[in-house]
Length: 252
Image 1 (cartoon, rainbow, N blue to C red):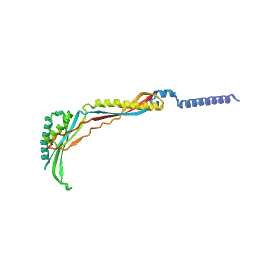
Image 2 (cartoon, rainbow, N blue to C red):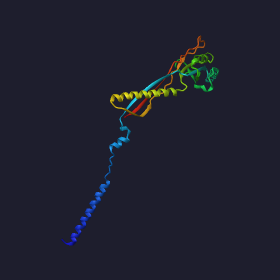
Image 3 (cartoon, rainbow, N blue to C red):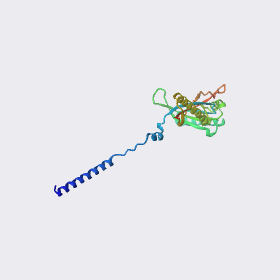
Image 4 (cartoon, one colour):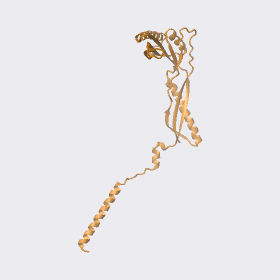
């Protein structure tokens, strides 16, 4: 073979080999590099892999109320809105003065509502026959044992036309904290029973959720009577404070 031809073949072979090496390097570089983490590390660092027990608990604490919430109202009617408003002011001032004379301080007297509106004819026609104005007051009464006498005074001397009362606690957080502790203990007792039935041991607490719903005490309405023979009797009774929780436990 002539030397010129042999040199050409060698040069071509070297070029082809070089191109193949470059192609292999490019392919190798383009392929992703996958690092596999041992499963034991994932399980140790990820809490949701840990089995556990989810349970709920609830508890109710009964306390005697130490505060009464009184709602009283007055109404006035007139042929004009101005007249109804003026007459209402007279009635409201009398009611507020009576509330203060009973020992209720200004900070415990709040306006619950105020309205002025037309009165339409009862035959269904849109004919205004007069105007009605109304105002309601929210009062705090701190001696629940004689709340009946307060209601009588607001009606008989204060001129209240609507009246209602409900009871509550001055410091509900103390009762809630007591009920919450009992609810968590109830949840733990249930979780222990479940773990024992499954043949496992209960571990540490992972999460606690308070699922209690705030509920207002019921309002009791009383029909005003300007000539009451006996003093109004309002039994106080007991107020239930209920707390519900959800607790997640790990397994030991």
